[in-house]
Length: 211
Image 1 (cartoon, rainbow, N blue to C red):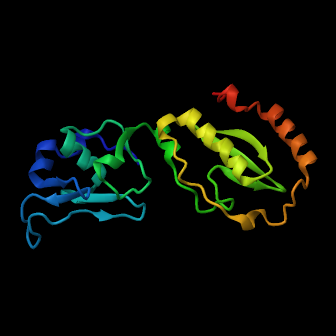
Image 2: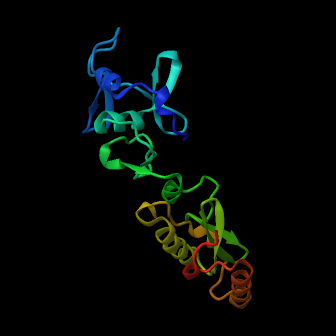
Image 3: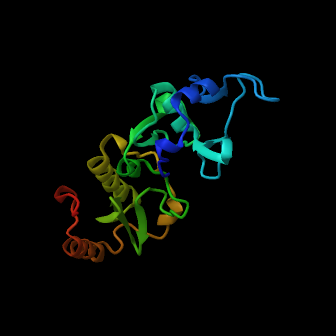
């Protein structure tokens, strides 16, 4: 999500006057009673994107995790904040870390339209294609006889390009996807396609990304 200019945000002093941080739960709470809301009441709401927002005067919505970072560290974060476990509403400090947009790309969840059960893996005839996106560029990692092998290649690439931000939690098993793939079926054709793909794309893991 875009980073709001600090000039348009409340000062840290104002934030600390309004709220205090419940570190055990990762919640922001009111520092003072306001109207029918008592001191200690949780503030903010969860949006459709999964992030929690807090609204200020003028109906300005600010991401709760960024407010928490400012309250705890005494300054608004200069980078985006990554939710380590992928839960966008889990704002415990242990789940928050500064990250660039590139680093955030290594910690994405399984897309809703994924049918292989593995992140970065898609079905291609009687094989499974592995690919990864690095700085908005698609890197093809090859074709594999099983989704598990394709996922292993994707996992290796995640660690290569994203380091500590590589998340492998978005994996699973959907055996029905591979129903009808008999052992050895189409292996020679697949091997030829792998070679062709490697030549055409020039994308082998040891060779690195082509910028």
